[in-house]
Image 1 (cartoon, helix red, strand yellow):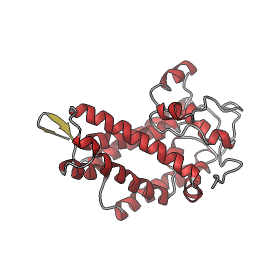
Image 2 (image 1 turned 60 degrees about the vertical axis):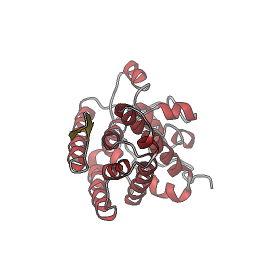
Image 3 (image 1 turned 180 degrees about the vertical axis):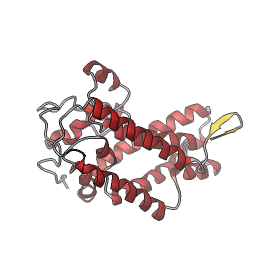
Length: 258
């Protein structure tokens, strides 16, 4: 990161280092916390980890080889060219960063809904839901084609909005970190969970989304901010069977309506 005209900026040169460092730190921290205070007893356990973590490596290589520009680099280009809605707004830099992060999070919420609603997209996304346990590695278990499509959609949103590069980096780090956190098999005290749900998607909130009950799987789409589920009417507070007894995996009726 560098200073430019008194504002904190970020460049694409340090994007990968920052993201990788944060990814590893959060992965290790959540894994350790799961071991110390698990929420549920796992049915398969860590035998799933080689597959789930192996997908991370495959997906990272695929994105690197097939998509030649990063999200931060795209933001640098669009803001430099004066394109996009946020870039053209006469707002202070910190407001542009905050708005950029929030709107990118809304975009990822809508994308998640889309991947459940469209049959062809669901066939990719169901790999994520096919995990029969729910822990930190579930948060990184995605089909390679879904990751590539998600990256392209994100680039399109960045071109349209032109958020500051710093906003894009913050969003990328938060998205990865929150996905691992809210898929964590973590026992968070009930009162703390209720408070956290006003600001971030918690593991208990997102676990409902991995229920085999279709109505529950079609709820709690948020990854980072919980507000979209509250506003869009897709929020479900608890699974009907309770968190310890609920069954995790592909919904009984897993094919979305056409």
